[in-house]
Image (cartoon, rainbow, N blue to C red):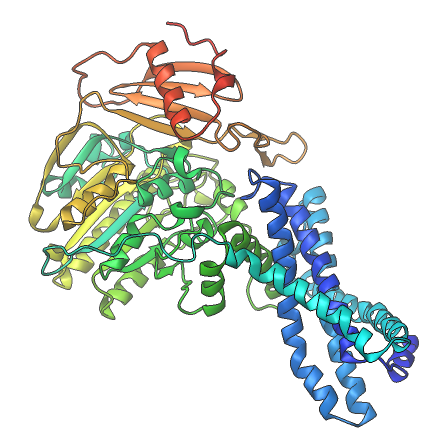
Length: 638
């Protein structure tokens, strides 16, 4: 401490000398984050070397520029003040900027190591340990100011021997490099403007509210709406009489992120490449979606989901939702601007960099509690806040946010543990002692979902809005990712289009159905079809899934195989034809087929042969740019 005080007292360096350290501290910080992100499965795993390099340099430039701009007020004060004490204080504050960058680098590096090796990090800290982490970070920052002071003094000494003109050369050169790294990706971004065409005129005096309610992991066979002997959905069963009900509906992806993205974009996951939790929409795909179209027609678009998984902003939906899970681009001008200016990879990298450090610092400073979203969705240690979503929906409606399009994803049915509001089927069982995927608790969670549907109906009806609203009830995927039916019910104003659909349908049909009802032309990039039009009985449904997970024998943690070319995050592809499905497992190199359990109705024509189905799946993958040559050797004979 004495040596630091002595150094401060006798320091003679200028703000320019300190500023020369900032770009290098920023580069080190971004480099460590870049290495961490590219060394694991991430949104940029399949990116080119150019894309990865661009992200590194652009991120370094942006952080260096931001830190340099932060130092400007102190630089001005330094030259305004003439007192030695005042200038000494300014030097301390200026040195604090690179010191903070360095200490943040160390914090993240240590946290990465401890969490990877011991499953313990900042997110795990509570009570006194949390405070000790904070004290340690503060002491580390103060300690790193010592080398920053020494480096600044060394730079000052080396610059005293050169002329004033020479002194300007390197700072100017460094500044130009920082500016180039920051703005060149913006200049070459092909999607600075939304590629969607302007809205066309539609014949509608009043656009209806649209509520899309999806329950996580719902099997149709568990719903009394579809004939289950357990009355898990009494309200939906009653509502079915005046609604359009798809009896044999299927998801297009086994996973919330892939499924909800295909549902909202009307695109196959094979096209958007959205399937795993690390995937993001890129290029035109980020702008081509249902909420963006509806927003252009005046809808207030809202998503209420689980913040980390299937969050629209995290998946990089552009110009889609005015609000998503409590966030709004309107309230965060900087983030919104970067979102529009930068290419998808660059923006998302900076978003990840910011989130990783801000989440940890806010946790240590007791501003917000850092949570582990992966633990919540894989182990369900606590109840999800689903009821708050309904409360917030009606708060916005009462504030006049109409017409509204809202996507509510109900997580209470997710599992592997369930925390029902009321125990009916699990009477006598202790929720605190439940194991994983206990059926009575699952049935009670479905009953909660049915009650949520009723609350939406009752809330709209009591406000006189039921006949001016569309309610869509569905699910993202089946429980435990089996190939089976998922529910789909749509209630239109004044009970229009009520009836049953026996042909195979898919979640990707939801967006075209809504657009058709509103009189909005279905864009060419949107697959699927309106559900109340004639459907081909031999229609083929494509379903994809990530590779199978396993348990680490030492830590018992869920682990996934590395994503490698040519299929990366895609582990399985399935063709569903009437009551039969055919599945290729890319990693296991197996091909299987079976009946769809619980299928309703009969098939008018036989399903394709094993060989025909195999070739249909390969054609689908090849159409969307996959190299399928490695699959031809899989046994697919009849």
